[in-house]
Length: 82
Image (tube, rainbow, N blue to C red; front, side, top):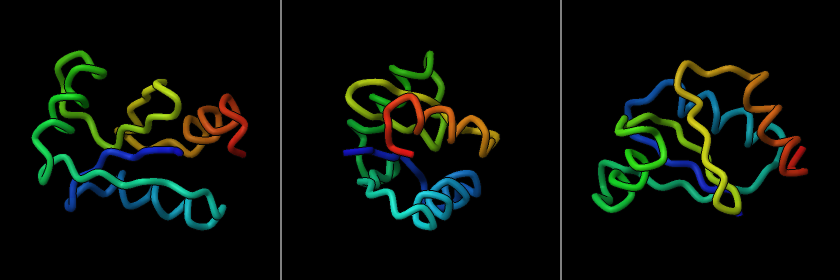
């Protein structure tokens, strides 16, 4: 299942979740402010940055900070989710 690492205040996270919801793509949301291990993971896959939203599907992580619908679509297509 697609995972999305977020924070409650992140506008890019809200935009990403809105697009996923419109497209009826199921995802598991993980708030890195509530889960220290998740925050560490996000930093690990993003070169030491707490970059959100970070999407992970089958071990492939991508940061969508500075939300781009084109980048989201590319990631979803890559994993046959779109």
